[in-house]
Image (cartoon, rainbow, N blue to C red):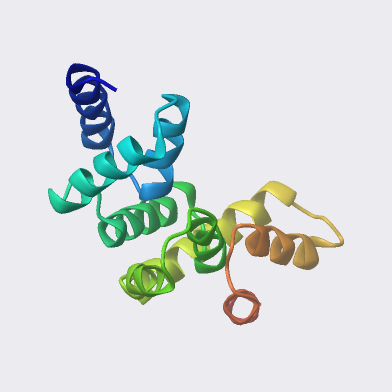
Length: 151
């Protein structure tokens, strides 16, 4: 690969990373689509890490708070998605530990309330609401405690 092509690709990847937080998995996918050899990929990734353009811990925190606040996901689902992106367990633990318990509880209550209202007078309301909250990634013990508080 010529220097000119390398710098053009590097510029493209830097712009891609500056648009939103990215993890190494996202960058690797983008580089794979560009059909460049392993040596060039590694050189670009090294540049991104050394210049703090890509930071897995920062990405994990941003991803966690975004999915919690906007998608109303719980810890279980966020954890699974981050593992799928090959984020290190330490970075995942750091991100999940930055969730404020009060905010987490408020979001769980909102998810349960919205689903309960949507179902109306259903005979299986309790189990449907619990399954819905679990599908959103909330822990069963938190769901059951909140459902008990509602009765």
